[in-house]
Image (cartoon, rainbow, N blue to C red):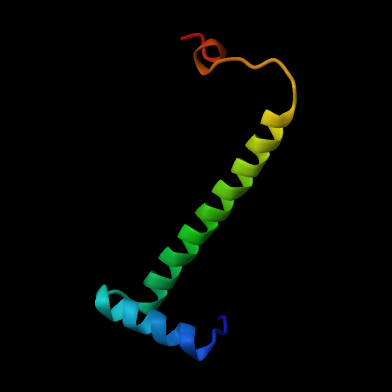
Length: 66
């Protein structure tokens, strides 16, 4: 169980009714999307750091012998 504020509760309730889903299923879907977005942002920042380094790069096709 988690506690959320009234405004968020009302939003999730309206969304679940609009989508004919349960509050739990809608909440889980939104949480999964948020986690994916956080992962994308993390890996994007890590890639940006690597690009700043002056080192040899290998193309995708060479790395996978395509």
